[in-house]
Length: 241
Image 1 (tube, rainbow, N blue to C red):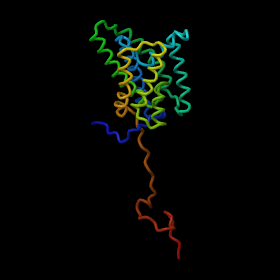
Image 2 (spheres, helix red, strand yellow):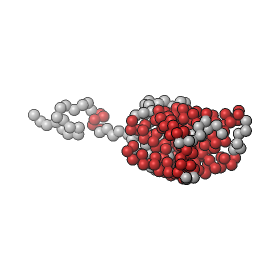
Image 3 (cartoon, rainbow, N blue to C red):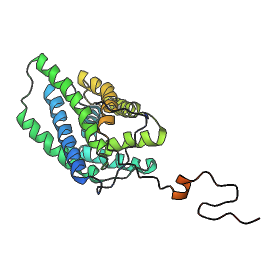
Image 4 (cartoon, rainbow, N blue to C red):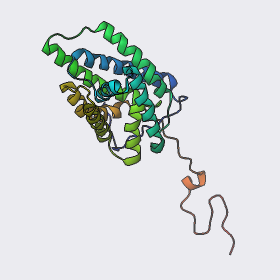
């Protein structure tokens, strides 16, 4: 059965881990592992990195830092932007750094570099689609998005922009900055920047955790009796004239 979305604005704010912890932790970890795997697919395709890694590549030689150190720096700076967006870090924010780093290294050890164009294209397309699914999976667990995804959910919550336009705008801005700094841009970069927003928008309604609504308590007298006369409070007898 398909999921019917009644509102274009999804609630992606963090939800307490006390609500369905096992299911949501599993969803978070699976999503992050798939995200790291999608990064490895794009790297092995050799047809262009995602916009954030283009930015990291452009900054690294200018700062004289390692690629990993620049990645950490941008993560901290992005977290500072969370403050005016009123985003709160959660378990997912920390797990984002650790699980993705482990999964991408494991995937790179298992996936050989592509040597033929057809295989490169397959890895590139598969990596982009898997990245969209993975993003929806771990963000939808609502245990706190990663630093960069917090920008997407923050803009979505504060401006009312759709997830699609918020994510696409961020990716295109980062891509332009990385290219101006000397980062390498390829066809995979362009495909990722244009497709990741619509893909996340497509899969999030299927994967976003929705807490059960709290029942509305209605006084018994209000439910059983007609509307009281003016000046009569539910549960009280009308005053004698």
